[in-house]
Image (cartoon, rainbow, N blue to C red; front, side, top):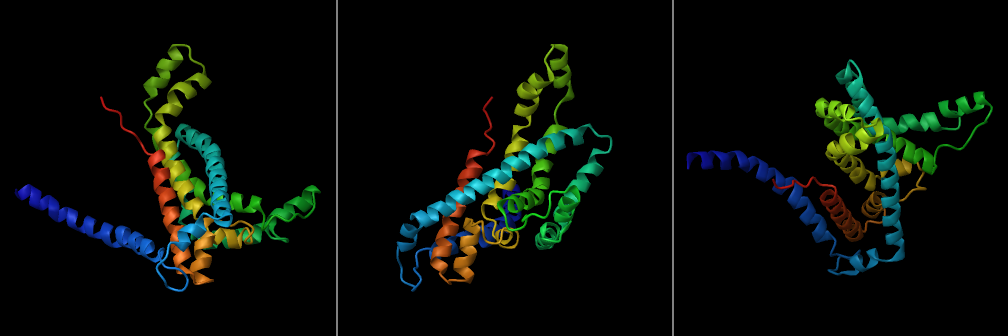
Length: 267
């Protein structure tokens, strides 16, 4: 009885935190989603969401988040694998993660200078003879900067999975005559798939709701669900429609977490 009471006391702050900062905000967003721009209770916002404009915006958000996640994964996996083979792997990992400590806004403004008309990137293109190009305010610049920002979060879980891999399994595969590709396909990748799933979660979910980079780097050429939420809350003052988009965004995030979640098999 005493142990149960002690456990409940330890769980109380956690439960209070979940109620105040997870359940309550979601409930508040859901509440506002049932009010139209005039403050009347209505389902018009939900009907409006399924119009071509918002469905196209949803598809666009999915597409850009998918591209950012796939590119980050393609770069992060071999990087994490090479890190596990280096001598001072923890130091190199720290150097890769360190830029993520810098404020996102500062990094965005740094790329404004790098990709600008008279920035470093165009200066290099001038030297190589290609000439100045419009790099900023393009899909390329948006995806490039997004991948740069999110890639440390993809590398870390993959690195941890690779670092925990039992080396005797690789030795056994080598003794049995398996090629490097077969070893990777049949042993390394399946045993590190949890790290890949975790990396995809921490990249895809925030990439789905990006809004600041779409304005600073893409020049509003890219419109995502996050951009739409910001505009409805701060520009048009249509809080009900902004909340409705947020509700669907939350649902999509939960579904993605369920799909990519780790499924424990019974023994």
